[in-house]
Length: 318
Image (cartoon, rainbow, N blue to C red; front, side, top):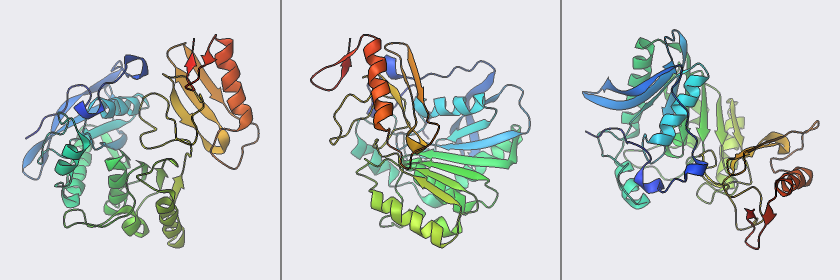
C-alpha cells in the first residue's frame, strides 16, 4: 500500500523556488490521514479551518502525478476559503507514482486504476469529510489533468454533488474495460453544474474535442460550461513559469511569472522576481479570452518601468 508523497513528484522536478506557491497552515487543521474504503486504509491529505464545523466539502482529485505537494497546496488554498478539502490517493492499490521519473512509467500504473474503484473511493472520502465536520449538502469536486476527467465522471455518479470544476483532462476517446466511459459519454447524466477549463494550445486535448463536448451538453440541456483560455497549454493552473506557444514566442510575461488570462481579455499574474502583482480588467469586456493589444502594451510598459528589457529570445531580463 502506497503512502503520500513528500514534496513534489519526481516527474515534475525540478521545481524552481521562485515559481513555487506555498500556502501555510496558519488557522487550519491539515495533514495526512487514512480513509477506510473497500477493505483498505487509503492515504489522503486534508485541510480545513481549525475547529470548523458544517463547512463546505471539496473533493480534490489529483493530477496523474498523485497527491504530491501541488495538490496538497490546492487543498490548503481551499481551506483558507472556508472549505474542508480532502485529496485521496486514488492510485493507492496500484502503486506509488510519486517516485517514478517518467510519464510513460506513470501511465502504466494509472491504466490499471478502475473508474468504479475511483468513484467508490471518492464516496468514502466524502463520507469521511462529513464525519470530520463537513457539510455534504455543500459538496463539490475539482480535479486536475487526470482528475479533470474524474470530476466529470463523479458529477454523473453522485446525485448529491452540488458543483464541479474540471481543470483540463481528457473528454473523449476509446474506452477500456477498467475505464469504459469518458466525460462526453456521461455529460447528459451529470447531477450538478460543471465548469470545464481547457487550454486552447493543449495538443493533447484538441479544441474540437472540447467543442463536441460543449455541443452534447447544450443538446442535452445540462448545466456545463466549457471555457478555453487560448493562450495556454496543459497545466496552466499549476504554479510554474509562464507558458509560451510556438505561435507566440514574444515575451508575454517575465520568466518567473505565473497567472493567466480570464474572461473577456482580463489578466492577473504575479512575478516574484521583481515583486510585481498585476491585474488588468476592462470596463467593457471583449468577446474572447486572449489578452488584447492594449493589455499587452500595459504589461510591456510595466516591465520596462521596472528596468526590464526583452532579449532576443523573447524573455524579460534586467
